[in-house]
Length: 477
Image (cartoon, rainbow, N blue to C red; front, side, top):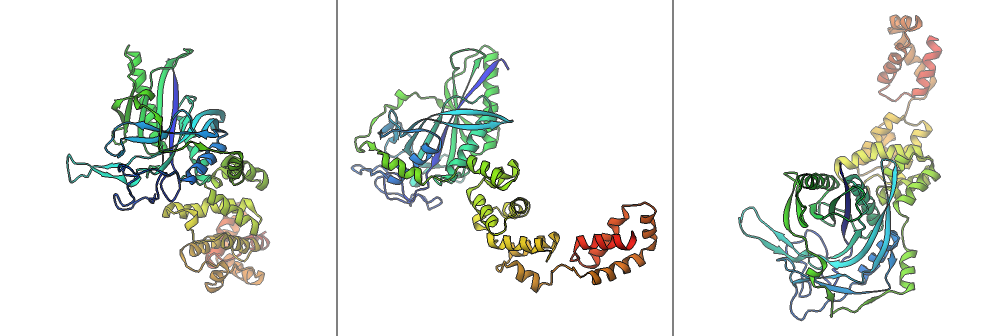
């Protein structure tokens, strides 16, 4: 390509507060339309906003996690524009004095590390939502439940040069916000969403190209598809001697194309001015230090620690730390049964398969860390085999009673480890298959697996595999 791709992202995180940013209404998702409303969030004349302190805490938390400077006196501003779902006719946001500035986020794409600058993080309220019912053509309804729900907007520098870098940045940012417990990261419900500013410029050109802003991307895959499409669209325009128009475009998921929505506004179009109803937010050192003391270990640091402390592969550590609760679950099992590699394998192969099939989180899992540790102890001691262990695991997952030892005892699943009993069984199998014994002794080594399989079949999978192998070798040489 003759052009350098330039991408900047604006990430909106809906904060996990119980009430809205400027009123006491619930932020609960899925309530009946307009149930979570009051005179403040519906813009009634004379209703005055009161700032939710938790929103400021969460914004500071996000700023510290992304190495931003915390602006000690920041100001709310009115962003003036008309939308049917914006009841006041303006949005309370921040402009010249946001709460966080000048941070960064490190990403890695195809083993290449890169640092993406963060211009700013600011607090703002969300707008409402327009509903377009299929049964009423030409009619739209307004749901103000989302109006005044608290957001932080994280604006990156235009440092990304491919859709892969943009997705890596988004994934890292989402992981951090979920770990901080400031956002649930749900892209489908819109609580974690982004707009992408994309432009092209000739290689080596000092000035940026004319940008288009992409909206309506509700998954990492759609972000990548939308950016790739927009890059190709702009490239075709420039190749044909045209000029890219500065505009806002919507991504049409079904058709796989971007569509023009409106001309892109500049800051002066919004006529920002300080909100007269809200005092400046003054943040002292004590406040920042208090938030810093309560910061959790972040995904990258936890990943690196897992590799060093537990001796597991980086790829395994990435899976285990992809969710804070999953990482906590892993470490809880390790404390009881200090075999981290075995635990990592069971969590990634067995446990995550069940959770993914049922589309539930680790916090909803019926198998406790104690239960998994006890199961692995039974396998480690030879009480049951790994194969039987998987059956017990499935029983623990689906049953209300998930005590592995009780399941093994009541169902008679304990491993057969009596040498005399196994020897008798093996002798019977060898006598019934004398021709195959001769084949083995004549050099057909694959027949050994046949004998092992017959013993396991006869014992219904309960024979100790190691003992079976050793006893068969003794009997047939």
